[in-house]
Length: 472
Ligand code: G6P
Image (cartoon, rainbow, N blue to C red):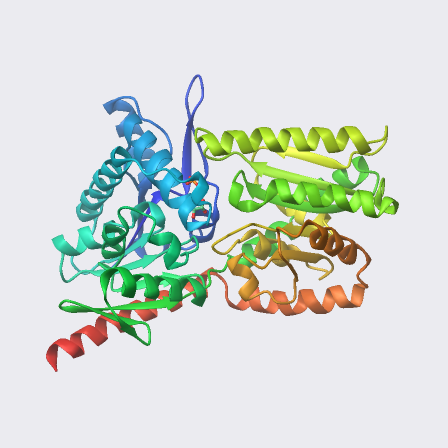
C-alpha cells in the first residue's frame, strides 16, 4: 500500500524540557495545526524536528519511541544546527525576505552551509522511511532544497512541495546570494503548491528570470521532466473548531470570562509573536480608536494573545519588548479601576480556551503586514455558530483572496484600521450574519481535507502527465 510521508521542519508535537521530565504539546503555527488532522490516516508518517535539543542517545531513543505511537519520526538537530539552520538561515534570512522585511535579513555563509547540511539530514531521514511507491510531501521554507536532494536519490519518486508562507516578488528573491540553488531545490518536486495565484506568479517569474526556464499554464519544463505549479488555498479542520466552540468546556470558560469582564464588548487578536503579524501596528490602531471615539472607553476591551515564538532571534526579542511597552503605556493611560483596555497574554492556550475566546469576541483582528494564508481568520469564522461577529482582515494575508466578506483593510493605515474597528462595533446584526454566512460556507467547503485531496489529485495528475510525455 502506498503511504504519504509528510516532511516539515517542525513536527505537530513539540517537546519541551522541564526540570524533571520532557513534556509533549501540540505545536503552534498554521502548518502544524492545519495538517495535524490529516496525517494519521492510511499509515502515513510525519518526519520532522521535535523542537528541542536532545542530550544523549537514551533520550533520543525515548523520544523516538514516544513519537512513534503517533506516527511521527523525529529528526534531531544539534545546538549549532538550531542556531545556524533554524534561527539563522530559515528565520533570519528566508523568513524576513519572503515576508518583505529585507531590512531584517542577514546573509551568512555559515548559515547557508548549515541549511544545506540540515536539508541533507532530512533527506536521509526521509529515504529511510519512504518506499518506492510512497508519496513524499515536503512542506515549507525550511526545506526548499529537499525536493531536489530527494529527486537525485530517487529519480522516479512522487514528490510534492507546498510553501506555507508568501512567495515574494522576484525583486526580493534576487537579493538572496543563494537564489538559484533555492529555486532549483524546489524544482525537484513534481508539483509545487502555493496559497494564492499571486505567490505562484511570483515564483514563475523568478524561475524565468533567474533560471531562464519559461512556463506555460503553470507547467515548467526542466531537463527530463515537467514540474506543475498551482495555487491551493489551505483550509482548516472546520468541524473540529465547530465542535470545540460548542463544547461545554468552551461555554463554561466563556461564561466565566464574561462575568470577569463585566460584559464589556471584546475585540480579539491571536498570533504567534512575529513582526510579520502587525501586532504593534494593531495596538496603535486600538489606541487611536479610544482617542477618536471616547464613547468606546469602558465599553470595549482588546484581548490580545501572543504565542511565544522564535524568541532567540533578535528581532523577535525586541518585538516582544515593544509590545510589552505599548500595552503598558496604553493601559496606564486609559484604564480605570473597573476596566482594562487591553488584556494581554504572552502564552499559548489549549483549543477549548481558544474556542471560548472566539465565542466571546464580537470582532477579530487579523491584520498581518504579510501572511501566507492565516488560519486564525478561518478558525474564528468556524467558531461562530450564531453567525454574529465581524472579521477585520488585512489585504496582505493570503486569506483575503477568499474571505472578501470580511472588512478588508491595509494594515499600515492605522486610521483605516481604527475606523474598521468602529464600523465593526456598530455593524447591524443582519449584516454580520450575512457576511459570516457567506464566509462560513466557503471555509466549511474548502476545509483542510478538501485541500489535501486537491493537492494529491493534482500530484497524481502531474505524474500521469509525465508518463504520457515519456511514452509519446
Ligand atoms: C509558520 C511557518 C511554519 C512554522 C510555524 C511556527 O506557520 O509557516 O513552518 O512551523 O510558523 O514557527 P516555528 O519556527 O516555531 O516552527
